[in-house]
Every structure is written in C-alpha cells, then in structure tokens.
Length: 200
Image 1 (cartoon, rainbow, N blue to C red):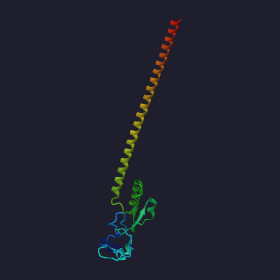
Image 2 (image 1 turned 135 degrees about the vertical axis):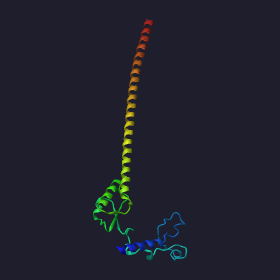
Image 3 (image 1 turned 45 degrees about the horizontal axis):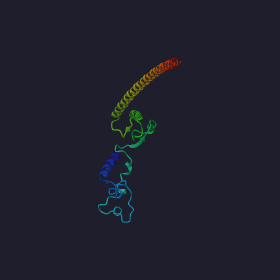
Image 4 (image 1 turned 180 degrees about the horizontal axis):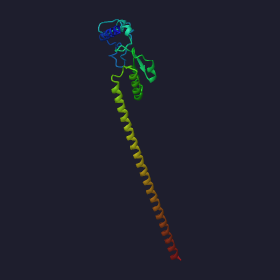
C-alpha cells in the first residue's frame, strides 16, 4: 500500500510537468478538433521536433505502469449503472463511478446501497448532501406537478361551465327565435286573411 501511495505521488508530480498535446495546427484552424493526431507530413515541424512547435506524444510521458488506470485515492474505478453491479465490487481495492445516464431516483438507491456496503463513490464528493438535494428536488417537482394538475382541472371545469352556459344561451336564443317565427307567421296569416276579406 505504501508503494502504491508513493507511485501515485510520483504520477501526480509527473502529470504537473506533462505538456498538453494538441494536434498540428489545432489552434490555427478553428475547424480542427484539438484532440491529438500524430503528424505524418514529410516537412512537419512538429514531427521533426523543431523548437517552439509543440511536444510529441512519447512513452516517457506515461504514468507508472503499476498505477495506470487507478484513481487518485488509490482505487480502481468501476462504472456502475444498476444496483446489481455493486455485488462484484471489492470495497478495499475498488471504487465506483455512477453513470451519468442513470436517473436521480436510481442514483439515490445506488448511493444508499454503496454506503451500506462501505463502497467509495468516486464521482460524488458528499453522498449524504447529494441524497438530500435530490430528495428536495423530487419533492419540489411533485408539488409543481400537483399544482399544475389542479390548475388544469380548474381550467377544464371553467371551460366546461362556459360551454354549458353558451349551450343554454344558444338554446334560449333558438326558443326565442322559434317563438318569434311563430308569431310572425301568425301575423302574416292574419294579414292574408284581412286581405282576403277586403278583396271579397
């Protein structure tokens, strides 16, 4: 374990000296991605290692082989996306990284199971605080949903009442129009009768 810690410290020191490897003309041309590509041009200044043209990726910049892939806490990181994945984790040698694609509720369950098994979570600094924050967020979301639903039901009732009122008004107007039509017909009949009487 002491040897592992010493190697991790050495890796930390080496990483401080390590340059950032940018592909040739990565900063000059905005369309190019900055990710490393080996220069292959015959006159490439970077390939020929001319002064002031950046550093080439070489074996010497690598970290010690014994701690390669280790987390800075000295644990091997294992990616977890369900509670079943925790069964194969060794808490003394390994730590877990919860996938970002995992939902918040499952996140909380995995954290609870991991803390119960004394497994270190590498991508969450304070698990207790995280659980508290998530529970508050979920509670808030639930309240907002309930509020939205009550508003929707209220609006629905108002619309139904308006529709019913409109229907009643239309019905009344229809009845009134029918009555008015009948009265008009009666008056027209009377006028016709009067005309017939006068002509006769």
